[in-house]
Image: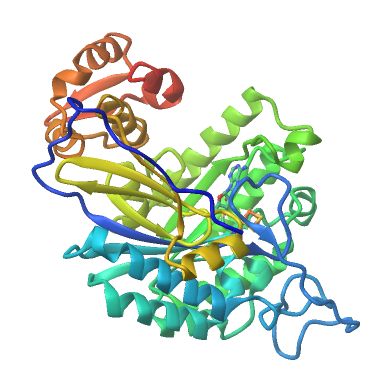
Length: 421
Ligand SMILES: C[S@@+](CC[C@H](N)C(=O)[O-])C[C@H]1O[C@@H](n2cnc3c(N)ncnc32)[C@H](O)[C@@H]1O
Ligand code: SF4
């Protein structure tokens, strides 16, 4: 089958971007398979049906991969071919980032921890051979407790991963079952204990406002989570995304008031143990903020490799977004043929201020006007009116050389962001 032509939208004459400097460049690598699709998830993740065995206990010594009787599907997962496709994708992308170095690497999914440590080692060696990584470059890998086996995390560490992001969501077995997770609370605790032991730093992902969740249940989740003293915590309000199983069959969720009480509990409890909220959903101890995600919020560049991955790349005269083919088999085939990109589009200069602000307003520290100009190539005058209106409504304030959302602005972030659209 012939591939569909790549859609490249170019700017019409007159609309121009001029960037005096390029922003930092991050690398994102998407590994698109999961043991089971969670009913709330709209990420590009594809259920991979592992072989089930008749054993009634997890493998000897291992704490188990998902439920008893479920074995790692690694042998049948097309790891080697996918890695080849990623390298072909990177090779084809190199001219677009030539001469630039990488500030962070994020291996996300899907469930990257389905891939063997040897595969991650190979991937990172292939990346290092082609792109210079900054000294001390943050390299994060997302892990699902349902793929946890003892020594596996040490293998990722030895491969060069510096930071594990563990997708816990909750420790409550009932709630985990309700949101369709493949692991239980005991596996989440075991994975975190191992992550803490194997890595100098790690992130813990939780969700709140889960179906039927009470404030007391969230409090118990926070007790357990904070008991692991995570250097970084991401806590997301469960959202019902279109085209998910939960969108088709909506569960009963805590109402807005209950969810707001939950967020108050989260902010109070995290602050009491020295985890500072620096973004809507992100909390960190000093020096532990996530370099990779900060780069997104500061409108940095990122090269996204892998099925369905998105890129944002700046050049002296334009800023481009790209998307890779979404379906894994198609991505592999096309990336190996040097055509990993399914669509590419220049961002219209008129859209750049809004795009910048959608990201920057998520940060507690806000942004510096000089950085706005550097990253968008536009004058701060482009957002003068919106800044004034936001200030008058008490949603944003000037703090030294920065503009930052007020507490009220953070509470009504959608209203604040809407002023810049
Ligand atoms: C891309 S997911 C990948 C992590 C890994 N696959 C896992 O689920 O353990 C990253 C995080 O996004 C959050 N997330 C995913 N879907 C969400 C939704 N619909 N609402 C809120 N948070 C969500 C979860 O906390 C999840 O850990
Ligand atoms: S494990 Fe993570 S990426 Fe996979 S379906 Fe669940 S939430 Fe989505």
